[in-house]
Image (cartoon, rainbow, N blue to C red):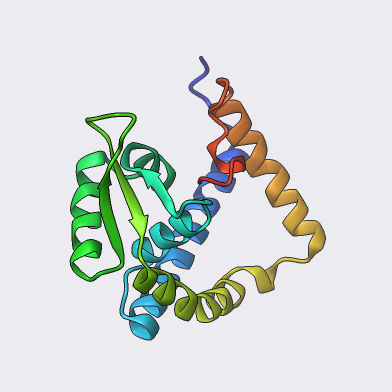
Length: 161
């Protein structure tokens, strides 16, 4: 494995991190300000709402949103206390648990969605033309495909995540 990275590639990495960090901080601030919920909560609600049953196993949800299982458990407990999700036992895996979106969670998600889409456009999409968007998607998909080339590991394409 090589330990040298071209200056241009390293600059691309650093620019990616800076753009990601700045954008996420803006989206987080606006979600809290406008909707009173953290951006991570919105992401969880969106992931659950996107499934046909409105639920995912906690282990799958943790992978989708890149949290440890214990971190996700604490987060889901707080969301459940606010009535946005329920935790249900998994009949096919006695050790497993489902996180399930509630009607109140769907309402919160749908209330937040228009302003969140507007924030994404304001802080990111408006800077891209169609060619930029296609190039960015192609590059990021190349990374995802290479890093997750195991069978069934393409979670970003499955709709569950």
